[in-house]
Image (cartoon, rainbow, N blue to C red; front, side, top):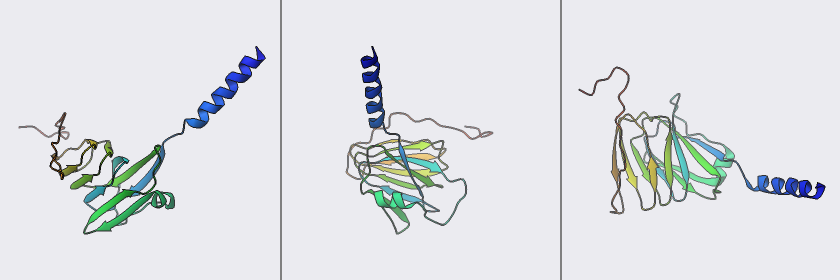
Length: 160
């Protein structure tokens, strides 16, 4: 009986070592309105609580991602993300979002964005919640499937 309990204890310890928690990598996009995401990433878009001009993150995030800004667009590329890495990008009034191959994007809460142009490449998925309109396009000429849209009215607003 002691051998069985000991064996179960060792197995439980082994499996818990393999079960790793999600690692959050946070980037603040400042006041940038255009975001381009690379391939093979899991990204969550978060509303900015306070708008800042600064693009910020920490050293670990910069080691795992290539982050650059050009012509008003923040480009985020996968350098060496692990399967447990989740990228969080803090945005305010995002206007353009381009998603690379095999990248999944979702939102935490509802994005403040009046109108969003979404460019989705093959094999990518976006689960977005916003008060504004989303115009989904494919830069590769593939068909974009929109499975469900829900109109959310602000408190006190009328659909008529």
